[in-house]
Image (cartoon, rainbow, N blue to C red; front, side, top):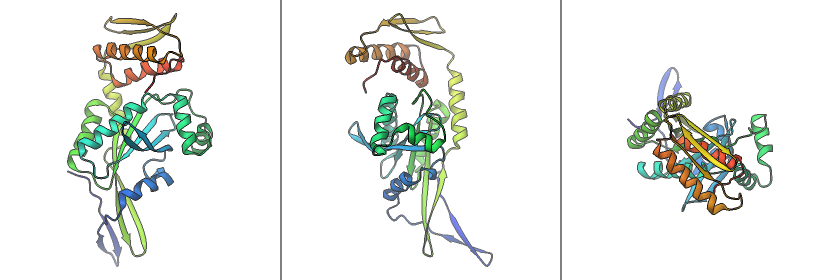
Length: 274
């Protein structure tokens, strides 16, 4: 069943339902979220908006207090298949961003203010040493149809994807505008489902860089290594990355395990081109 928010005013102990209005809600939602991302979550800092990538435009990119990047996409009039495919596509690109990329995106968004300063001001602490270890996804809409709701719940509950959906309803009461938010899933439940999905992965992974080689091995005994090129050779680094991903998938690696390989390479100076 699709999510629907209802609102009542109470006068002389008699509740009266207030009918929602469409107006230009989804066009205004992005501006509201830029001004106050607390409408979605109090644990977010917007660091980019209207980012052109893959022939599309990522609406909002944020970071949370753990340094995880958060993709926020407005559904607008997209079909369920289109919005979910697009938001996961953007998340796959965001997964490749390293600390330098994040700082550059934030610098453009803040018009000169550094990522570190904005993070400190918002969360009261410096950014963690490792940024973008994980990604989270939010779909935002004025209403959520049953197919989109079903897909989001399936990805979260069955595959441990950090995905959630929020709907906003708009009302006018006298001369005041009122907006109400509903979350499809409890964020704490999303986290527990992700952790449960991680525990299902019994083939533990070890990744390290040893004497100029990228070494990956799994609990099942499968092991592979590749000689790493010079750090300036982006093309060769990309080829190693593709080989490493293919090997990981052969061993049924989770998305988190794949992301860890990329993080190990980036943290050792081997920048992966998106």
